Length: 367
Image (tube, rainbow, N blue to C red; front, top):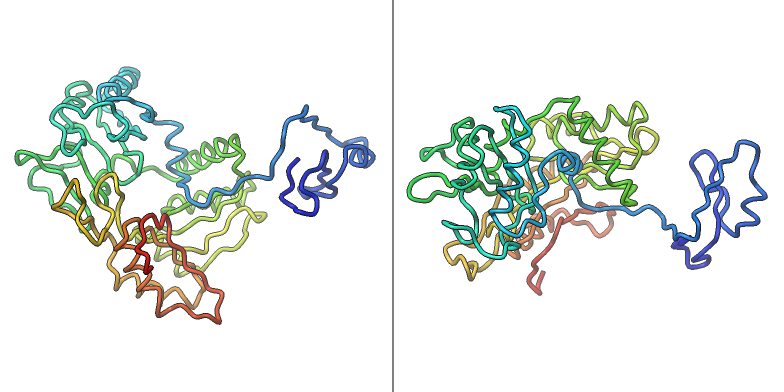
């Protein structure tokens, strides 16, 4: 057993009482502590580690992934379509079909009619005409819709993308591709109620625990997600620890939690809600991460800013009294530069208040 304690890095046994380690040491000494109701677990020479902490994931997304079509590993757009069509054949007409995990850079060749490697909806719409299809990109910053979904959502050539978002158009018509904040247009097809939210948490935690992850930072939880997590924590139904970030783009969640204040180690120390997640830019795969220079393979763009910087500064001021932590998604080098500049006036060397940048993927040397 690996303890992570340099004074006692490995042991052969532990004893646990009321959820806490009461003994860490050798097997004989541990067995001497057992009583008539003690449960003894023999690991049969397996190695045991402390539970892992995942510092950035999306609980509802992991739960939904257990239900949706798994598109990871697809080697082509044709294989993706085959997987989606196979699932569609098991559903009654009209049921929304969701999938996740596709990435055009993983395909052996780009699909016919592609736009900078990205697929368009046409072949998908032909293969699956009777279900609205919403396929989330592996990076979470793009979705592909089929024709049925666009019709149900009212997306056409005249639809205007929200600020910070892109509706990809070709020959004057939407291709089915939505980037960044434009993916919110698909939200009506992905909406779920409180019961479903709890089911997604349960699916997610069972999957994460099976992989040895016992604590997770939920990087952007909606109002319904947070309500589900808090309800489960109060009932004792959270089996893992969650450090959940209020998603700033969910106005209902943000206003509710700013009014009520942070929640620290609630529900038997299983739930903490004391940080706010802001998304400042996009992702590299969709060419929406905000860069100082244009993309070499897409010279007409340098990415996008997806959250107003003045609004970010105002959020920091409004939340500071209650000691909310502000966690900002920034991937591009300009996004990181600008976010650091917003942080700077609020950084006090005498204070232990800590900001976070999620990803910090590309940085200038000066930053």
